[in-house]
Image (cartoon, rainbow, N blue to C red):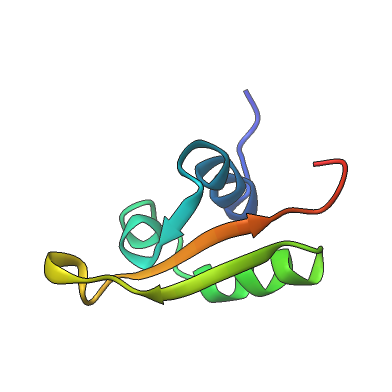
Length: 71
């Protein structure tokens, strides 16, 4: 088994959940989530973003709106 890049781990989470959060990233030792999201946007991904509510009000969410064709 080859080691996955942090970017690939984020993409896998987006495939499963349709979103990724800063708390999820931190708990999976991904400390550059903002940079990874920026790279994905440059690759053609589109996200809705925003702060959580209630118990997740300190948690920032990135929801997939669309992804590049062919992915």
